[in-house]
Amino acid sequence: MNPISPIAQADKAAPRPESPPVNLLGLDGAALASLVENWGDKPFRAKQLQRWLHQRGVDDFEQMTDLAKSFREKLARHCEIRVPGVVTAHKSADGTRKWLLDVGNGNAVETVFIPEDDRGTLCISTQAGCTVACRFCSTGHQGFNRNLGVDEIIGQLWLARRTIEADREGARLVRGAPVQLGAGDDRVISNVVMMGMGEPLLNYDNTVSALRLMLDDNAYGLSRRRVTVSTSGVVPMMDRLARDCPVALAVSLHAPNDALRDDLVPLNRKYPLSELIAACQRYLEFAPRDFITFEYVMLDGINDGDEHARQLIDIARQVSCKFNLIPFNPFPQSGLKRSPAARVRLFAQRLMDAGIVTTVRKTRGDDIDAACGQLAGEVKDRTRLKERLAGETRFGRIVEVRE
Image (tube, rainbow, N blue to C red):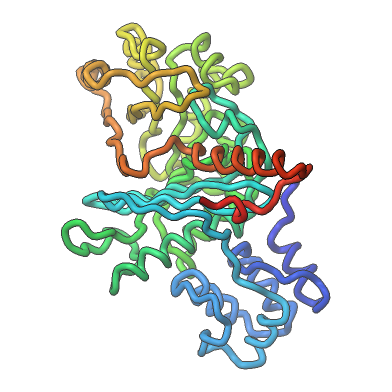
């Protein structure tokens, strides 16, 4: 599926009232400037509009009070501000939030906010489903449905920030250190990670457009160091990202040798470890950080042995990196088990003894816990069951199967 560029979309839709409304959340600075130019308005209007959309989170054109009335009328005729609908929203006792969002045709994606002592991290999705089909990934077991548009990717950030700020008076998105709101309170979104459903680099154009909005000082103004793209190793797109929009990079490694990674991460059969490590080395020439983060899910008896740790140490000697060990979140279709906590600690210690920065990801939101993509898969399963019982042949809207 070839995405329509935001500029082309704006150029096509703006002059013709009969055209479908343009979702402004999907337009980056250049596309907004093109929209304004087509209407014969001053260029600074684009920046004003962008600030209203993304910095202030306003979705009513009439509230954009420093825009000329005639300009607001054009916006109302030709444009809209629309985010994916919320199917469910959960908040954990530790402040973690998870949203299940409707993206149409029986598909849903997940967005998660994790408040920590020194940051507030939002994990967003880039695809409905995933083609990579890693063995340990719930999303991969659902198959691939479609790429998310820029508006749907940015819409997750827009919605999460607005929801959190509505709950915490005076909270605001800042550049740099997040606002301290008091013990137990949520924190603003200071970091964004594309580690939700889907492979970001297989939705490349829309991912990069969304990244540019996140980095734009007239939109979210996030630092390149605080925005992370996670990839399972799409080597050509890693090279493109390094040139087009270098942000922090995380690589879903999960295995220290080709034989095991071929099984766990099928993409490895196309881009084996030697090519992946070389791509990581090239990326570091452009990256805002001087290391690559390797994500490594800990699977009992599969990739958590002493020899696996030794092989990871060999990889770390080839590329500047740190390791993030992830306790596996089991789901029935995987047939896999989480490594025991003692085993994870020993594995981590072996890496640290070799001088490798290693962290073990904390489990968060245990009272709302589900593997990434699992909630969306359950909704799709319920949708299919409902349709089968009703004798229907196509998906109904996901909001109709809400529980």
